[in-house]
Length: 310
Image (cartoon, rainbow, N blue to C red):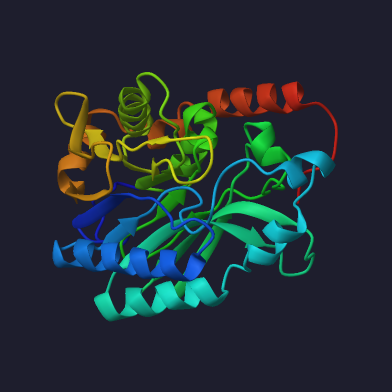
């Protein structure tokens, strides 16, 4: 399906991405702060506002989690179920301002109260649309605390289909973005926590544009900033971009290293010009379907026997 098909969403969507620093160990104050940024984005015309990975939460090392290789009592206590109090407060703001919001948070499993996930909620003006749980937990700081998710959903919204992958999911595991695009996503969203390593902002820009170009979609990365959460500092550089026909990856908006909101229009008829020349989804489902099966079989063989995660 072409990204400019009016059956799947509006021709133009205005997106905001937020360089953001949570208030350490104070979720209530953090939501207040998020509400201010949502208001700023809405005043700039945004339809969708994207916050970083774990935007709601304190993020840093935890000796108690590391000692037992599972979430400590404090982290379990401060995690929330997907539709918990913070989600309801953000949903109230989304409804009042008529926007969609994506934000990262520590999610408490509703049935197993000892399990938490590194998740992202997608909230529409009429409430919670759905929750994505990060699949690839890239460092011990995460595996000591979180359990991996087991689904790769595309969320149908009034803005069109949206796919979410979180940080390491997005940078080092490009097959996730490809699957999301094949399932119909026309916007890929990357809530991330990219630390302030050398050339971090340049790499964030590059990865965002590559994921967008290779899948012929728009991509949005939102990163943390600041140094109030322990030893790490965060690079910022939130970016919105996509293929710029007839050329290649084009940055539509980019943040610096401080807190700020960036806004850009995603023009789907303009994006669809690529589909007139390179209808890769149709090729994958048609003349290249044998190759798609080959790739799927290779991945299955590499994974080896075993149960599926869900």
